[in-house]
Image (tube, rainbow, N blue to C red; front, side, top):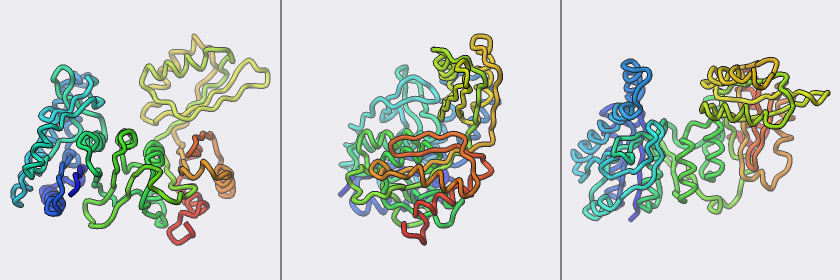
Length: 409
């Protein structure tokens, strides 16, 4: 007998027929003798509608009331799924975040989980009861409803799996696992059987949409084995595990791309101590996340051009912050380019294998693709290129690293 947390996203519970399908999947695990907790998102499109209504009522809204509204989507799905399970003869009950409770901090809209009291849930497991849990929501220090931010249901599921000492956390989505790259770009993309937490974290943070970054970080921190698999097809998925569980490492495991990037260059920035701190400190204070950074000092050594990337949705805010600093810093111009894409190759095998970056640069050069910015970590190399070349670059790199389904990868 195993203890399993099953998580189903919005598309998996998007209609009453799909909710009934989820109930049948859960019953299969129960019939196998397993203890099961199910975490569900709101039905697809529901959260977007709730956010839109909130913004229509008040653009500058009280974040506490915003959380009350947007958390209501999950209340509907837990109730419906509990009913669907009961209809199949399964003993089940719904749990909202505050009923467990999921204790969080008080940062509404992006709350972080502190602790989860699973005492009562464990007791119900001994009675053969399935727990149907609302993802994405919790309760703050002041007993107000909180939400965890976009993709928060994945985080809820992994956190619950850790608190329950579950054998694994199965995350059901509209794809059947993690692929070497986006199958919509290249039909030669292969499903990965096993991937390390670190690789999954890098792929998720560099644009792969399969798992939410916070949930992967939490799984790695608590050693929760995560499986990504399809709600609609009955076949094995991808296991996200500790590096020690993978016997032989690929040099490159996958290629991610992030099209939602914008490049900003500050021209003629005085080259003196404290300038970079003032620039990036001010951006951070305005919640603008900066990613890749490159600095070029001019020949006279008195000024520098500073280039960095931000999310495309943060570009206007970044401009506003930087324009406010012009008098203080004395730079000559701001040049921005929203038409860029970040391409990343990821693999823990890079630690022991030289030449990964060289292959990347030579492959892109052979296709006539200019590299604008480069950044690296121990298991990742990222480059910024013109968005026009995104698909060409991904396909060429996928082939160059032997990842094609019909290649030697």
